[in-house]
Length: 317
Ligand code: MEV
Image 1 (cartoon, rainbow, N blue to C red):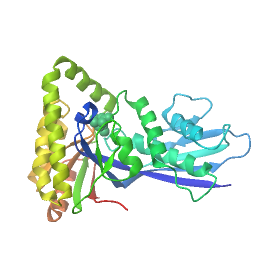
Image 2 (image 1 turned 90 degrees about the horizontal axis):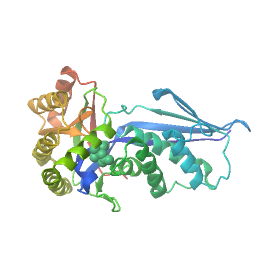
Image 3 (image 1 turned 135 degrees about the vertical axis):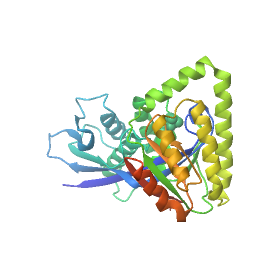
């Protein structure tokens, strides 16, 4: 029985969430400390195609669940492959990326499944799946999760590279002048990206010019952050994070718990911190000099963060 395994990492948005939905630039980086893993194994003839995801208690039969996100990812990947009918496969997908935490768990699960299907069905075993195709499929699945995704989450998770992202344009990889460290703290509060993005949309409709101004401000911070990161001056990112967070508060996507963790991070030595992803829950990210990272991490754990990761931001090979 042949079997193929594929993985996809988590991600964080460094700068630009929400504004990116409205055409402003944003920066996101992969978080390789956590990942989704899909293993595809040939099943006996006639078994059909099934997908098992114990972390979310899902057991899906491809033929019977046309609108399930896991099934959609697999079905769209099969359509792109050289297979004509439903294959006899068993797919198992596991993930240690916190769900509904802003770390891109849904996109990573889809990306791992799609990569496994394309790699398994390729005529040549050495052929790597075409990442543009993987990205297109994962984006289609993201649309099931929330109606108006910008496409940044699937892009960073599929390419596994720091990404400078502008909606509708080919994503650009950009240089990390000097690697730096991020402390990522999980508030433990689940947040629905769909609900928060929809609330921001309603508020934008009510007060378009004010919201557009805030989005412009966030976009300008992302531009400055890109230059700062490429120039290897990550020590200046703290202030930009503080400024981005101030504007996210005006969008009403922060929460008392996120603010508390941001304050703890900054008081324990981080140069700056902000929420990451849709907000209202999920993760806070902080940038800190390497000599302060351990203290910031410990302070966040002592303050009740559900989990804290320290991730290195670097260009990946
Ligand atoms: C969610 O990770 C990021 C948002 O900007 C939504 C999106 O870009 O689709 C809030």
